[in-house]
Structures are given as C-alpha cells and as structure tokens.
Length: 275
Image (tube, rainbow, N blue to C red; front, side, top):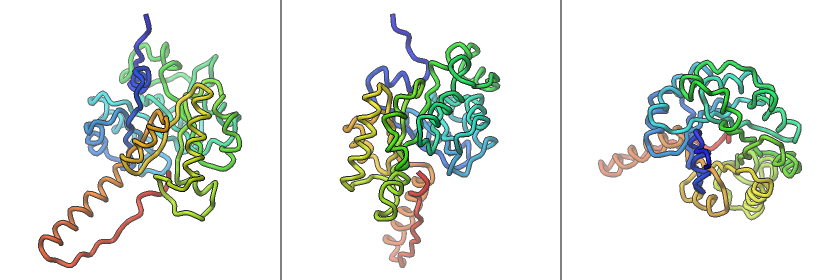
C-alpha cells in the first residue's frame, strides 16, 4: 500500500498533475491569505526579490495555513542559515536562486536534509506545530528542494545539476535566463517566444525528466503557463501579488476614465523584473 504524501505538492505530483503556484512579494499576511484562497495549489514567498524578510514571512505562513495550500519560499541566496530558518518556520519547500554547478546543488540539498542525508541543523520551531509533531521523521522525504536554472553557466552544467542526489527539481526564471543566454538582445520578462529561449526551456524540462526530477517554470500569464504544462512542466507559477494588484488597479482607473470621459493618464510600472 503506497503512502499518501503529506506535502500537498508531492500529493498532486503523485496524482499525475501539474502544480499551480502563486507568488507572494508583498509582506502582508492578509494578501497572502487572499492569494491562498484564490485556488492555487501552492504559494511561494519571495525573500530574494520580494519586500519580505523572515519576520514578514512567518505571519504569512500562518495566514496561509488555514487554506491547506502548500507554502514554499524562495531563499535570498545559497545560504545555510536562511534556508534552514525558512524550513524551521514551516515551509514545505525551498526554491534557491542562481545555482550554477553540481557542487552548489549538492550544498543546497545538504542544507535542506537532515544527517545523514545532509547537514541541516535540527530545530523545527514552528514546523513541529504547523506540519506535524513527527516532522523529523518525514521531513527529508516530504520537503521539496528546487534549484533555479537562470544563467549560461547553469545551462552548461545542466546535465550534472539535475543528477544531484536529493534534488527534487529545477526551476526556470525566464528573465534572468534570457539575460544570461542572450544578454540584452531581448526585453526582460517572462513568457519567452524567441525560438532559442523556448528551446532552452524545453531542454531544461527534458534534462530534468531524464534525471527523474521535476521542472518548475515562472510565467507571466495563465495561457503561457498552460503551454508550459503542455511541454511537460510539473509546476507553473502564474503571476504574483504585485503584478495582480498593479494590473487590477490600472484596469479600474482606465475603466473609470473611459466611462467618465476623463483623460486617460496611466503610468505603467514594470513588474516583470527579478525572476
């Protein structure tokens, strides 16, 4: 009899489905609660580029708990102290930026797993309450560990990175990957349509699946995320709280000015950077 995964992300994968992930960059338990209630399978708190630190993250994790949605966090960097503290706070997964080599991927895995599988220090302060009192017994099998592939160096080392023992998946940040592979030849942002970038994304999917691990993709629109799933992506992020708020506010102002016959004065803000 197979064991049903405790981590909602792993449960969805076990059912053969892709995970729909939301992204949180605003340090607010209320906005996190709203996003978690919208129907996402998981939400990720962005500590790298978001306006969030540990003290902001903790109440966001607490706010999301009631929804039953899985929470992950993108760490600020490959730093053992911050990664372990995120996990101790009760996150079901880690996404770590700028993993460029097999050695860096091995370090990442070691920070996520307890001995003898890694070097994670024991002290699941909130995880014991939020995820289960027997957390130590299942953490290594349930916590999800993603390494971000977003540089030319990472692509050159892709086949070695995806075969890192204990790594659950790789996650593509299209904006940084486009900069890394093409410089400033193209605009920054998500939803790449350039043939060489589509090929790069599909190569990451093939490499990950060839190694028996998962692939995550950051997206700007739901339609592109669906395309990513059709390519084989196992987790797709569709927009973030900042972008959704900005777009909704702009649409509301535009609609009012149109209906009221007022001059349309809209200043667009780039909310696509940093992924």
